[in-house]
Image (cartoon, rainbow, N blue to C red; front, side):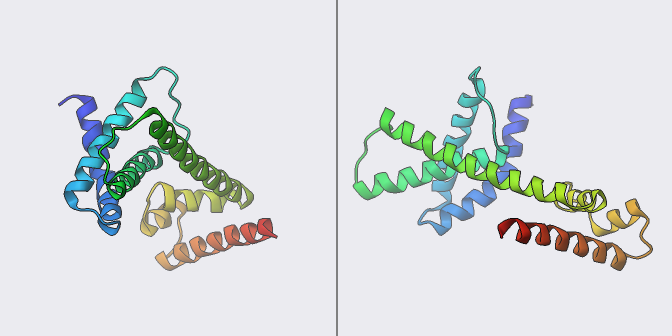
Amino acid sequence: MSSQKKTLDKLYTDYFPVFKLFVLRNNGSIEDAEDIFQEAMMVLVEKLRQDDFVLSASLKTYVMAIAKNLWFKQLRDAKKNSTTELTDVHSSVLMEEITTAIEVEKTYWDKLNAYLFSVSSHCKTILEMFYFEKKTIDEIQKHFGYSTKHNAQNQKYKCVEQVKAVKEKDNK
């Protein structure tokens, strides 16, 4: 199996279930979700082949933005009862919507990173391990040598509270 096929299979496994739910909740069927997601994968592959392509958000955010915008376009087109093809105007609007979605996501991650850098390095490490590396409380307990799982959970809670305090201070 080629590495490109493995990558696309992984993207499908990781991202399609979320997108399928989105389509089902927005007047679509499983078949609609499959068709649109496949189209989104083709758009992604084409973008990746461009020399000047720079991914400025997470891959998940980018793929989901493409897929959601393609779905919204299909809904708009169905509403108009028109079978027009994607014109340059539609294409530029789609890319503008994708860019906006990516910018919103980047702003979110930039703020989150700023909050994480505002707390103690110990808390930053705990939160990164739990939320980004998907480590369990048991793994965190072992890593830091906490005597009980409860102590590790309390420490994580205190770290979340630190982030909340920084965020509240920042929002004032």
